[in-house]
Length: 468
Image (cartoon, rainbow, N blue to C red; front, top):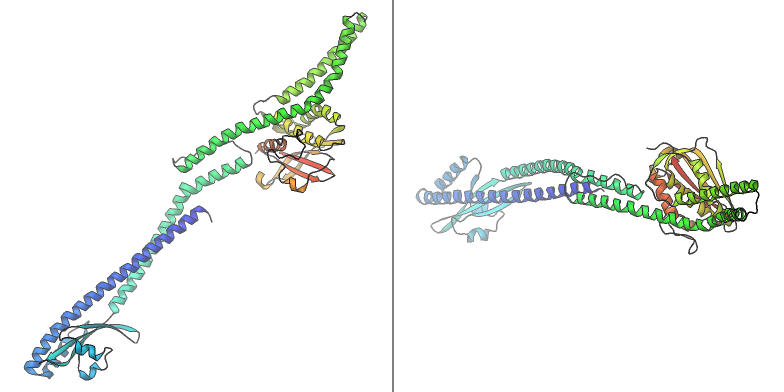
């Protein structure tokens, strides 16, 4: 359950508890007031009747006294009054000894239940000439009290329901405004960070703890951008180091040609026509070395991101040309095939060359006994994984396939983690695939891997042809 419903339920439960306890205490207090008022009224009426009846009994006899009690009973609308003689006292729900022991004029109050109805009964003993003649009974049903209790319960329930609805509505709306919507913004930002997208700072209007958290997230993204660029540059430089031996070998042949021809010209061992031919050979060899060095420097150069419409076929061809010396050294052939009539896509050329270089170098290193690395381009409609949106998209797919040792199943889930590598010490930094994954995700694409131990691996890079 989410935070806002939890807070709403907690507030509703607290409101119900407080109002329920308040209603219970209110009913209990009011019932106490009812009982006190009833006892006081019964005691006052009973003492007055006992005094008057005793006086009439002494002056006019028992019959006149009982007639006076009946007369008062007929004029009482709420309290039922009757005389209880010696015989009737035996039917009362009271111990006769208690009635005998109670002084004249002192009320005895009890709550009795008959046929499901509750009645308050008060007995006031009456003595004449020091002899206990009987008692005056005052009884009153608790209808008014029960009606009040029911009304109080209904009022409390209605009040509780109204406050629950109001508090639940207010807490939900305020929670959505102050917490829910802003937490969703932060969650979306965290999701994009997890996918490698550090753009789009979080801006919250209110100034509170969530705003402070958003500012810290923005600062973290700024630092992550710098760190990611440093990691990519470090991976690029590590790749340059691996290419160095192949480039040195590639430069060796034209340098020998240049040196030999220049020496022959300098020592006058050539005719004028031969000197011109040798000069052309020197210029051609120099152009070749210049191209190799320029490609290496361009790959090593760290520049700003510049996305534009690029022909990925030409980019792949230049990348394979750069890596060919290293591949030749390991007796690996590089093949490029394109099934796409239009291989253009909106990318940063330098970053995409780094992706192709990392994947191709991994393929070369996966075949220690030589073989063929196939780079294939094609267009297809593919469904993106959940972390990339999960929708169908028209993509340009770049496959890099080797026929090497393959990847063990237990390592598949760790392939794109930084610093994870299964290569020998000195062979890899563990940054190549992590950097590759980050670059592809920044371009709105994704990578899939298909590998079988002993049969090789295929890395497929999907780049949407239309940028969202």
